Image (cartoon, helix red, strand yellow):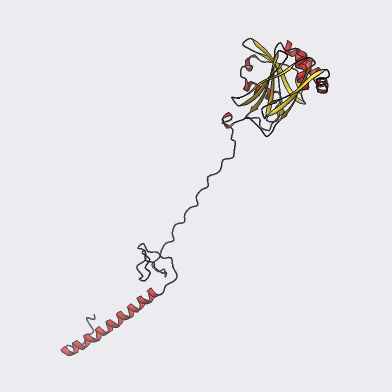
Length: 287
């Protein structure tokens, strides 16, 4: 199988090609270039000498569970697509080979049925990678997937007719720089993921019940219309917030004394009236 052969070749040559390709210059034995993907990343690579490098268009799109920022380029007449995959659920984590496969198939569910994975893992720029091939509507592509950063995956697709030496040189020399401060992810791409800590709604403090007003409270009784000159009976919508007031109770005691004095005067008058009528005083019928 061609994909397995390419994987084996990449394993044998990736380390040597990485050092050799980066050392080559356009004036030497190969072509090297650096291409950007929006504000999110840039990648450098080299190809065998004589291969033309023509950058093409870039794009962004959402997919189920993440967002993709991509660019394409031509190596001679062979198209290469480089995708940066930002899954919602890999923030800050490094994936194993199975994790890389799951995120790749989440990006393109058709690969679950048609992708054939190489049994020998590969290292790209010091990170483990998965390689293989897949076919869609009769068109076959070779691919390689790895993590250049903890929050992003890089998926590279080559046309099936791309020469193996171009693929080996590209993969063996690939170095990607990720801008950790930029991400294409939007809230709508990850509605199931919380993007901020919810602000708790403060519970209103309970309003203390008013203290009961007792009839014997000795406080100023404020008139509801602002007239404090005349005290009234507590408990009828009047305010009891004020300093201690003894005048009310002093007035009550004075009334008692005056009432007693009137009673004694009436008693004396009654006794005199009885004596005058000759009936005398029997002590009964006191007013």
